[in-house]
Image 1 (cartoon, rainbow, N blue to C red):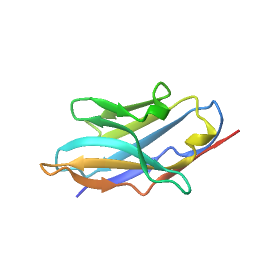
Image 2 (cartoon, rainbow, N blue to C red):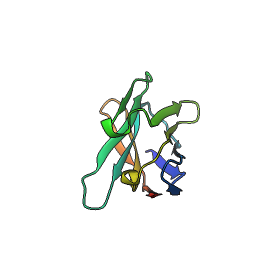
Image 3 (cartoon, rainbow, N blue to C red):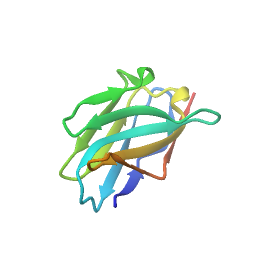
Image 4 (cartoon, rainbow, N blue to C red):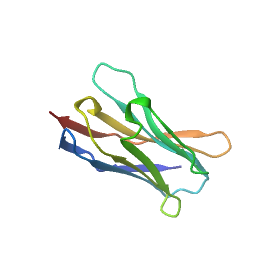
Length: 117
């Protein structure tokens, strides 16, 4: 079992920055992929950024050049550094990990990010 603890959400003005953290507590299996999804009101949940155990990254086109995903394998933690935030980045951000041989999914509870203009 993997328990995910998210932090770092909040209210920020356009152009500002936030850093989200997600800790995979009590992880006893290999974490293959860690990433972040977001869901804005009235929209589908979308992948924002992900990072593999080999440090390969993937980003949504809308955040490329502004967001950076990274991981600390020792701490089983994934980060999302969000710079140059825009009002359209406003959403609930969810941590996601895929573990083990079958890439079993685990989800965090979500953290609200609100960007004001």
